Image 1 (cartoon, one colour):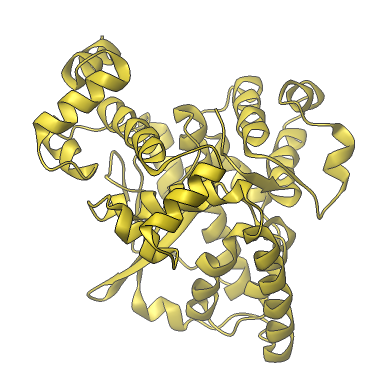
Image 2 (image 1 turned 120 degrees about the horizontal axis):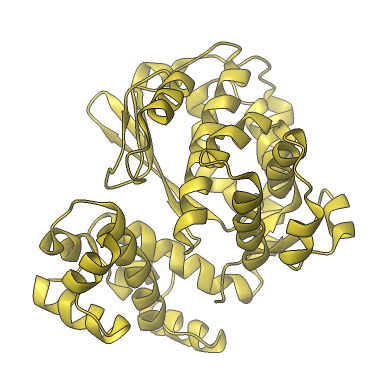
Length: 340
């Protein structure tokens, strides 16, 4: 596994606070993930994405909590989002805050990408998790979406609720479904085709508790310089390409030219930069398609034809051939084996 980027220490600490509150001994999880304990004392530090994924995996096992992601969201603080958290605090409305998330979320880490779209009277805020481990993805998606809601409620100083929440995860036990509905205070659609929060546009006008235009500008300038520094690192280029591919696949396309255009470069430059990173566009595309195909075959009721279109294939036969090349099994055989 490679190219999982980095995660900020404040993001890591949110999970550790939850574990410690549950009297879970975290030292073994930290060392098992290959994290030096002293690194966690540096609020401006980062760990590798592979280490963060391994840490969450270990905490899932230690806690034996099927709702670890949802429950750990209660530990969110302004600092959990690094400087982005304080930027959001300085905004005047929820809508203003929303505009800053995708712009500065890399400061929190390379765990995923947020996209926003408007459909009629509603805004769809979708999060695309970058981590391939299925068990970790389920908990991380829960944590991210629930943390957004917790933080928005704190910023607005009231219990604001979404119109609806979409989760790709399988339908939980009835008592756990009730816990999701109680927390979000809205209908939850499980086994959905995306992970998203749907808000009515009126909610974007909701005022926040302490807007400060001058501080907002200062923090944004600081954040821009940090983003520029991150983007200069060659290691992160494959992450940026992978995240862009995920966003494009959400629209049902996977063209190299469109990804390159999104990154403000030519397709030839994109290929050259990936080669310098010991990767290629096709390698990343295949990795992401396999990751998403495995997830959809395991955790959704979509037909294989629909999954093929979801992954940007022109027809089911192309998907069938590619999946067999990747795994040695047909999509149908793979699904039957996982269900048995």
